Each structure stands twice: as structure tokens, then as C-alpha cells.
Length: 141
Figure 1 (cartoon, rainbow, N blue to C red):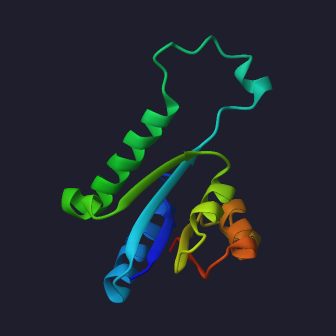
Figure 2: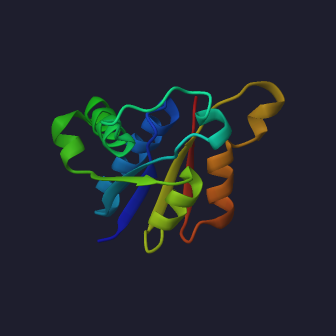
């Protein structure tokens, strides 16, 4: 039994990728690992903001957001069957790190119209070029 890693940031395209990963895992017997990553804002942007409250915990907020997204998309029972991983770091690099040893990496791609329809999003483009395992990009309809 292997592992399928899926990037879940709460967007519609990531929820579609999550559904795809879960269906694939049902066929293969693999486990599903949902990954969400977060970063502190760039220093120049953060310096324009008032101070952060002492109890501000971005790791906890990201964990709650991931859990809520999984429960909304899969129901409580389905969400409980998915491993939840929240890390600090660049989304593309976080997915590449978690994909080491995985059977498959699944990501969503935000849809565009016209000329941009031929392009992938920056995260999906980066992971397809550098992943240590096969990658599936789930496009919006």
C-alpha cells in the first residue's frame, strides 16, 4: 500500500484534486495525505500591518482551514480517513518534499480562458517539472 499526496489550499481546484485523489486511492488501496502550507507575508508587506496579536497562530489557523475543507468536501468520515499535513513553507516546495516516497502527487490547476488556458498555475507547473513521483494535474471544467 502506497501514499497519494494531494495539495489542498481550500480553492475549488484543490477540492477537485482532493476528490480525484480519494477516488484513485479507492482503486489502488493507497492512503491519501492532504498537504496545506502557509508562509508569513513578505517583510515589506508585513511592515505595513499593525502588530500581530500575541495569540495569533498561523499553524493552528491553517490546520483548522484544512480540516474544515476536508470535512466539507468529504464529510466527517471521509475526512477522518485522510492524513492531514500542515507545513510552513512555499507551497510547491512543500508538496515536493512530502511527495518523496509517494506513489502519486495530485494538484489542482486554476482554470483560465483564452490564451492562458494552455498554461498551468505556478505550483502545478513547478511540481510537474520537479516531482520525485508521477503527478496528476486536475483541471477545472
